[in-house]
Length: 142
Image 1 (cartoon, one colour):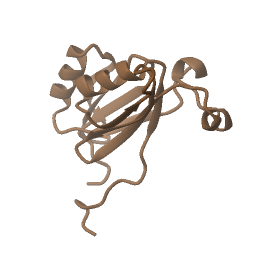
Image 2 (cartoon, one colour):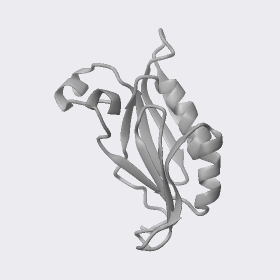
Image 3 (spheres, helix red, strand yellow):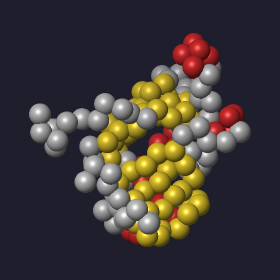
Image 4 (cartoon, helix red, strand yellow):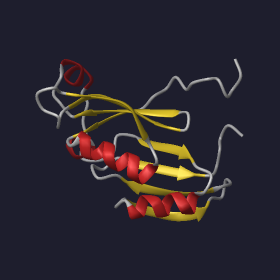
């Protein structure tokens, strides 16, 4: 299978108190697109599962509900955990343009775009519920 045809088999899953707002933010600020959103038929503010894609990468998003899986896994949002539990890194071609898009959509930039000592350029942002996202031109696969 060629590298272009290969799909990543590690997909980050993020929980949000306000999943519909988070989905809007991730699309507007970071350039994701909705592939599928499964909202509760009785309460559209509850998202049971959503798949957002950017280029050939995906994140899955859900509402921070107390489900059997969440109970067993000990799943928490950054606010519930008292800090971030993981960070996400995505490769982008134009770091400065991406940072400007994120800033215009209301993202909180926590590290301005800068050249990195290991190569490339990058920046970091906190989303509305505290997840940390880093974007950079450094491609560890290259």
